[in-house]
Length: 368
Image (cartoon, rainbow, N blue to C red):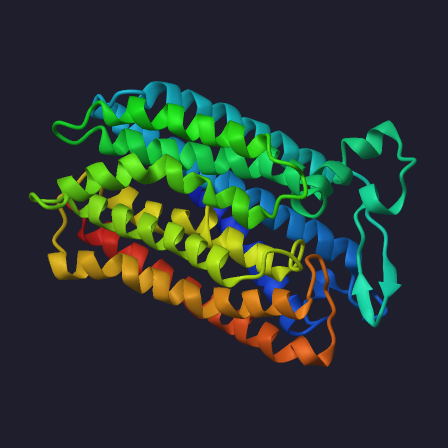
């Protein structure tokens, strides 16, 4: 089963990467991609929104499948709570696939111009009198990826983040003397998810995510003790990666204003820090989990910092774009934002190349 799950994880990741390339190319140079351009040569808002929604859905599907694969690997080691985590991950993965199908088969969204921007409003904001069919089409995806923040957090963010974090716990439970940790982490993650779900819908997304810091403290404490005594390679990468992701969220909570950037590119950047960012560390940890590896331990210790640094190169421009006012789901933008979009797109491309190269090296040097 782990091999099958890994295959579907890689497939979802490929779709998420390809759609990300299309979206970033369009933001860097509107009208560049023929797939997102009308026959008249203008930016195609409908195609852009659908591509953005497809990217978001497949990205969260990738995270959920990755956590499910991690649980399947830990199950082979007899880790406590691995089987329930595996089942939960499969259920949520199938649910996201159903959402993906509905989003692709749903009706198109409309276009409206405002203040020099080309704004592609979701159906849920454009026309309150929608049909029943539309409510199961893009309006659902719009609520998840571009509309009400609370719906997004409760229906997409929480399952993806929860499954991945629970999988981290059960993998740690496969280590000697730590079998109990899986049963400890699960109630904390579920409790934090319920707490976030109960927050008012006007609560900024960044504060919702910061609650997860409480859920991973036992993991970090147990992992820190474990890596002081012959640490496994996977745990070094996972622990440092989790510290980087959560540290990024805490820095953002401290440094960013408490309001004014919701539904902008800053929100997108925050999601790429956590939980999407955590997936960039979880994948190499999963590859190293069987162990051992021929790579020197110095390289293993540097893996997570290198990933975090490469991520920062393209996440920081996104943060400044949002603080400057660029909303989500815009395929066009004023000239003032052109440079940041081009820089972010270039750095994303470089990150993908470097990351895929690193994953290839890890797979070839892992002897487990």
